[in-house]
Image 1: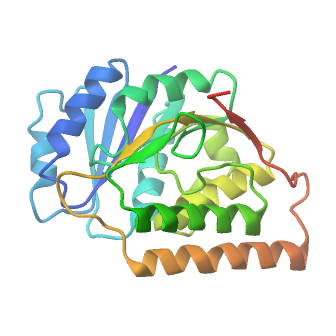
Image 2 (image 1 turned 30 degrees about the vertical axis):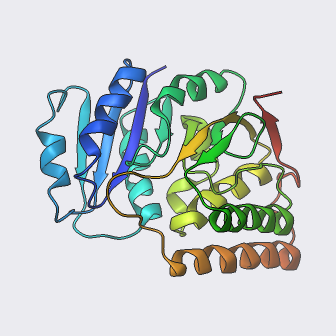
Length: 252
């Protein structure tokens, strides 16, 4: 299956070369698309200067910083237009382990979507304090409870999709950004009855660059979850959807 790994970037010059090298090493048959929002720190120049550019590494430049969801939608459109069978998404800071990419791809033999999950047996986080762990756990519990999802890591940003799964969930028509973009895709997949396998990973906090997380992104996620559920209750579920998420724990 032809595979591409999509990596959105904004001011990731400190670590972009390391993540590109790691992905090429652990997924030697995959291509890489970097979606850069005109990073002022020269991230794009480092991508273009990589020895694997433009044979295995590609750059999609965008005119301004416009949010994680918008960057992924642009990258997904690029990949779908070029006929890739498998589309992987991951962060640029090595918080997602590139060594797990082959396992995510392998999981797609039996599932529509694979998630690198912190919250299944064998998964976890590294270098997080108690407060951040509690916030993350509470956020996932809130999402799962309000939307009725069985996926344990609803905000995970390390995912692999079959191309037909991406088109079925209408990812290019989604509107949300940040954590809510990941949640929206989980929610849409659930309602369509798509199968999801959660592959255990250890999430490692970034060691280079700065986090893009803001309180606004968190507020957006909390509010949209309520809006989505309220609209379901008010209008009923879309025709042909299912109320459950077929989630498979790869560690079981």
